[in-house]
Figure (tube, rainbow, N blue to C red):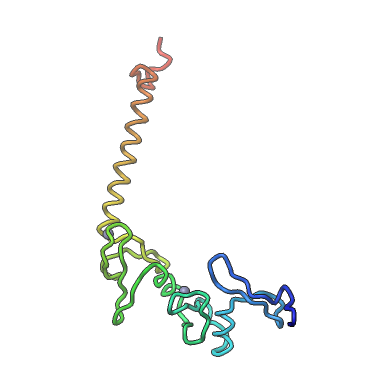
Length: 156
Ligand SMILES: [Zn+2]
Ligand SMILES: [Zn+2]
């Protein structure tokens, strides 16, 4: 049995992808990118290769698809593309809603994990929490200073 040099063995990355040693480039490359590029040429900038069946080690050509980075992010955040419309489950209420109507989008095209309704509920809750913190801080200060206001300090 021929021994394989250590560097030539495929590796598994921490994200679950397969890396293989590229003799020509003398460095490790992602196997799924290698497979796709060997058939279609270089991956265009701003694009990724996605595993259609979700199995990151299944690098058969038919399992690999070229997607732009925004689409790729959506695919990995649980979005579904149905007849040209993106749907996504809200991380808070769990409801499946249209991305274009039910969610707020950030400037870079990524979508918030919670729906508009939950986003509003969250910001209200955050504001309430901040108010409670200010109140608690004031109460603590007053307890320490016997209710004196700062401008009375030093008056004897
Ligand atoms: Zn992917
Ligand atoms: Zn929600």
